Image 1: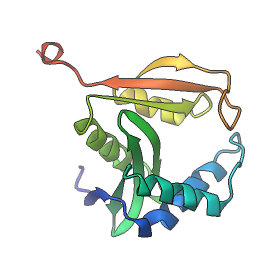
Image 2 (image 1 turned 90 degrees about the vertical axis):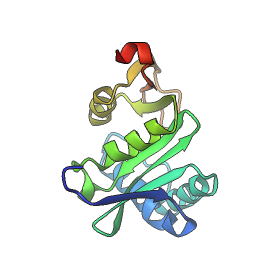
Image 3 (image 1 turned 60 degrees about the vertical axis):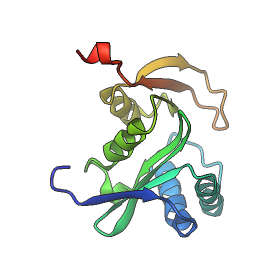
Length: 154
């Protein structure tokens, strides 16, 4: 991966604080996104995802740099710390998830154009839109990815 040393591993309960901080940081960086939860609630949410066995983390430069939470085909969360963005870590997490599933789906907000470009670049396509029937009340987009069949690869 471009000479960047990274490691992927299952998350453990001691990671919850750092993962929750990534969630908090991402919300605070988007002025259009309402702040519905406290930093403590973000840590608790990260802990719940870890307890369910859904979370894979990426370590870079001996630090936790990002994570993906996946429940079967559903990607519940994908975050990369701001200091580690643009280094292929989100791609590494997503590619790892693709090796573990034949299909993946996720939601992202319509205002999150960076996430939309990222998922489209990685083979996802739009399957639905809403006017904001979520906790944040923001319009969002449902994306889907399916592993290409052998016939499609030849």
